[in-house]
Length: 209
Image 1: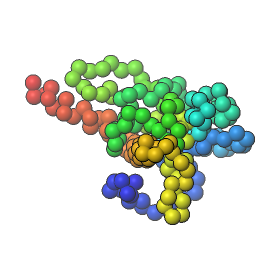
Image 2 (image 1 turned 135 degrees about the vertical axis):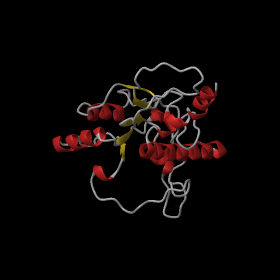
Image 3 (image 1 turned 90 degrees about the vertical axis):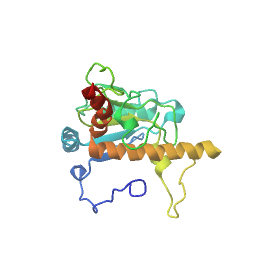
Image 4 (image 1 turned 60 degrees about the horizontal axis):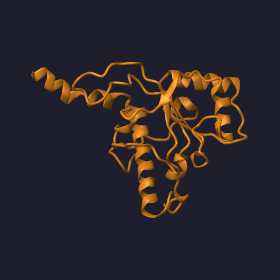
């Protein structure tokens, strides 16, 4: 965020999920399930505006964060005790596509897997509005399998830690993964401001009529 925008970290936060508005959860086979106390804290975290990104990291296996892969089955077990509303595939006009960068998809080290978010309330499209006003708040979960951390990771010398794609197209994919990360954090920190802001020109135009 410091490199891509004007934001500067305010210092090292304290321990525990309450100190972070965003948690990245890589889902791997064999990981232990959270304790009762941990589930209570996770649900409280999401109820108070926190977001968890669950990444099964298995899009290269055809995974869609469902039960078709070992990591997908682990995610299903984790989710059983989380208070999560129904999900939907992120629509093309979701706020995540434009909180900072304009994006058409959300690649990581892998690409092509669907990304799931909390389903929006059914709202009618308003004539003259370029986007639906979908997000009164922040979806408490984002779920996918594109291995975003693998695309973001760098070595101590600043080099990419893992390969992404091939040649120039791979570097473009890595750049898009970084942009998704920026959009994600901006979305967590600012919520629906972009969803409201994008309507301003259309609203002013209609008021002028």
